[in-house]
Structures are given as structure tokens and as C-alpha cells.
Length: 566
Image 1 (cartoon, one colour):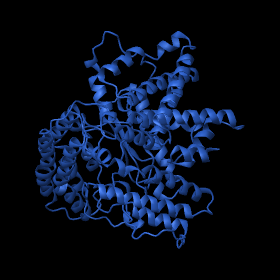
Image 2 (spheres, helix red, strand yellow):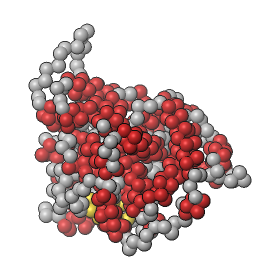
Image 3 (cartoon, rainbow, N blue to C red):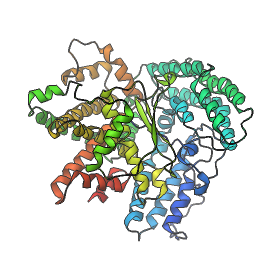
Image 4 (cartoon, rainbow, N blue to C red):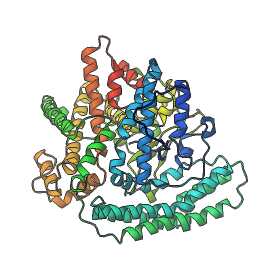
């Protein structure tokens, strides 16, 4: 999976005054000039994400401030809504656009429209930045690991982030207390896991050989500016502020006594929020019931299709000896980089490395993640893939997901299109994860025959549909742990004699991360459906052409993808 990098807070355009009739919008800027100004508007100058997505932000007229973790209030969510509304009106005013400019306009309008109701779910949305695995706060160390120290000012901004971290973490604790009072907070099992994550982070960060301390010292040794005193200052801030902040987080959250963990439907406005989140995460403007109906129909058809294959081939699905033996992940990606050329448009060579997630983060980190390239990326700059654990050949699809033809391939292709740079900042997670999930399965064809690849893809889709239906079951239909287990038994994924407690870890994870699995699986199923439609209607169809057209559209919600795919 790709790890999400853009953690900036939206810039706000405050609208003043109110009249009964809206005035006509006067376009004083060209469309490209307007997008240039919009790019600046959406960046908070105090956000650490600036360091991670720009090599030189000043070339985009962005002047970084002193970085902080940040915290949004309800009023700021409401101001953001005004910004989205104003931006949509401005974008819509550019009517006489063609080609790439029309595409950029339509993509941005669609994205901003998907954000319009965020303020209605403030306590849910802002509260989810605190979590034990996929959350921003659980992964701060991940962002700091790849932070670039290009100048002394970058060091000062980094130090400010560490210095102010405890006060922002405390704001999230205070918000969680409010969420508990409003019946919107985390269940006890989730809170316990957040406390464990925070305690572990604090204890690891206090060690002299903590990886962030070691990396900082190494980067200072390589810096071409005066670094005197920085190592000692960083060590103090790491101990007192970084470790201290996480210890504060653990201590205060451990004082909260919450109800047992359940799905969103049992919380105030939870069902409505889940529907909103499902639309945002999948990039599909479909209701929960529509998605559920689509998946159930597709599940039945795929089951019938799978059982039409030879039993020996079906049995091969449950073996893992069909994976080739690669020396390491780099050799695997070198292989894929060559093999995919017949099915995917070529991109320039990518300068990247493969890193192992530090053991101190193993519990809270994802199985794998890729850091997207700078918007102003140059080939001399290193890109990063992280793998959580040791390499083995059964990670073939994971490497395809993160590297070629997955995230790294897709995001580097995006850079070569003529899309405005703002399109590489305001990306759609469902599009990215849907693509990576689709191609990791597609890549099986390079190590097997086409027949097995098709069976493998169907079997994967079956598992993924069931997982999404469980997500919907927990968060929208209100399933208990026992009901989730019963569903798994009914679908043949669990023994009738299994205890419900055996699935509690799975239940808590899904409850803690609503609409995350649909972001991957529903989105990739949508790509498969678009592919099936293209096969049926394009006279000159080929997988290469389908992939090229999809990639040329870039990161977009699927309403826009469907509009521009033909």
C-alpha cells in the first residue's frame, strides 16, 4: 500500500459579505495562472508536508513557515467549506477550456465537491488523525525519517515541529474526550492499542540509538551548512518533546474509560459519516446500498466463474511455490520493470531505494509503503519504498503494488503528463490504491500463464469483495464480532467450530479503519469494470491502450475517469 504523504492542512479563503444575487465572476487570470494561485492557497505554510512534496517550494511561490503538527477546529472546517465552494465557482467559470485544461478543471471540481460535507463530520474526521496504525499521529516518525535537511532553516523548522509536538498531541486527547462525551469516540480496544503504540514510541525514542537520532546525526554529517550544536539539540528535543509528547499521549488516553469497540453505525451520525467516507475513499459517488448491491451481484458471478476452472489449477492458488526466486526486492522490481513494457507505457528510469521499516515502528507501520516523488522531482533525487520485515518471494504482489507497475510507476507517469502541478498534490486515494491493487494482480501474468492469472484475479476479487462486505457489515449494518464470524463461516472462510475471539483482532482493525479496505478493493473492482466495458466497446482495444488512457487522465475520481476514458 502506498503510505499517504500529503498531511498539509487546507489553506482557507475567507469570504466576506452576503448579497441576494451572486455577482458575475470576472476572470482576471488565465486558467494556468489561476491554478498557480490555487496551489498556493491549498498549502498551509506551517505544514511539515511541504518538505516532503517539494524540493524547492519557493519556485511555486510557497514560503515555508515553522512546521507544526497542526490541529483543525470546527470553525476551520467550516472556513474550508467556504474555500471549496468559492474554488468550485471559480473553476466552473472557466468554460472555454479544452484538452488538459478542461480535464484539470473537472478533476479539481470533482475533488472539491467531495470535500463539501467534511464540516458535518468534524468530530469523526479530525478525531481519526489519532489512531494506532494507519493514522497520521501513529506515523509521524515515518515522515521524519525521510525529512530533507537542505538548509539550516530546514533544521530549525524540524526542531519547531518537535518542540511543539506535545501541545498538539494534547489537543487530540482533548478532542477524544469530547468525542467520547458525544458518543463519537474510539472503543476501549482501539484506545488500548493507541496507548500501546504511544508508550512504545516514547520508550524507543528515549534510547540513544533510536533510529531518528541516528539518521539525524548522519544527515548533519553530510550537510553543507554549519551544523554545530544541532546534534545535541536534536537529542534533547527527541527525549523531552518527541518521546515526552507520546508519553503524555499514552498517559492521558489511558485515563479514558470507553465502551467496547463497535462500528460507526452505533455512534452519533456514524452511518451518515460512513457513507460520506465511502464516497471519498473509493472515488465513487455511490451510496452504501448501491455499492453493497453491486458487490453482492459480482460476488455471485465470480464464484460461478471460479468453479468453472480445473480443480488442479484452483489448488495452485493455495500454494506459494509458483513465485520465482529473486535475490531481493530490487531484483524483483528490475524484473518487473522490464516485463511490463509490453502492457504499460514506458517511463524514465526511476532513482529509488528499498528500505526496511525500523523495528521500533513495526507494530504500527503498514506492511509496505512508497513515498510519492517531489512535485518538482529530478532524476538525481532518491525515491523510497519501505518494506515492513524481511524480504521473501511471496511478497511479489506487494512489490508490484508499491513499485512497478504500481504506485512508483503511476506517480512517476503522472509527473510526465501535461497536468498542472496541483494535480500531483490534490490526489485521489481511491484512484491510487485502486490502480496499485489492480496491477499487483495483473502482474501475476509475468510469472505464470494467462489462464492462471485470470483465475488468480477472480479469487483475489472474491476475497476482497467479502472483506468490503464485512467493512460495510460492521460500520453500516452494525455487525457484532459474533455476526462477523458467522458471515465468515457462511462464506467458507472460517470453521464453524472457530471461536469468535479468534477474529477479534480483525474486527478491531476494521472498526478502527472505516472504509479503508473499500479504498483499495472497490476502487480496483471499478477499474476492472471499466476495463470490461472498454473491451466490449473499443474497436482497437488492448491492455496497453486501456492502461495508457487511464494513466493519461491521472489521479481523479471515477466520475471524471468515466467521462474522459473513451
